[in-house]
Image (tube, rainbow, N blue to C red; front, side, top):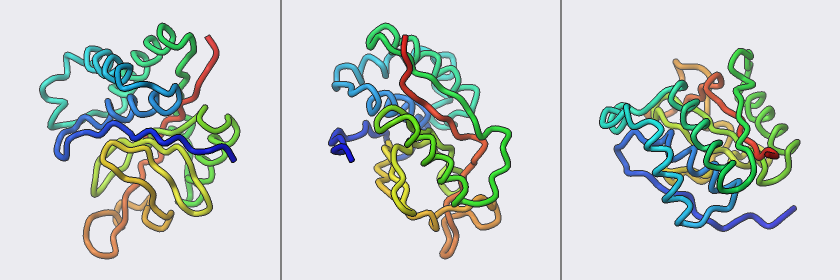
Length: 189
């Protein structure tokens, strides 16, 4: 197995709703090996691409249509700066996922099929966080994040697909929105 990169993800503030921007930025950082200067430029491009949503995006966050806009802006930037493509899709959008294990097995299969560092997932998490995050590796029953809130890794049993079992109280889990999960990968120009 190749040595894991030691770059730290760019982090957002504790209470802002900019996780979709940071998830897109961190996905590109991880796949294309950005410097801090490149991070700054891509952040500017991403914010400009959704400028009409400011300032409300800061406290309300974003949904799927905004992610599509961010992906298109990031792809255009990647084409220009890296002479490559940021390819993306939502293969689970209309797929029934029966269990957390099945969900993460699907993510693992796609990451492994494209090779380390060439594919990852942006996953929508529901209660209690309502957060977009990057999943870049799955080993055994542990999922690893490249996350703007500082999440590092969680075991599969920390998650649920059942809204009634999600929340921040004792015994509750983190809700996965399987239909708001996006595969991003490096493509040829």
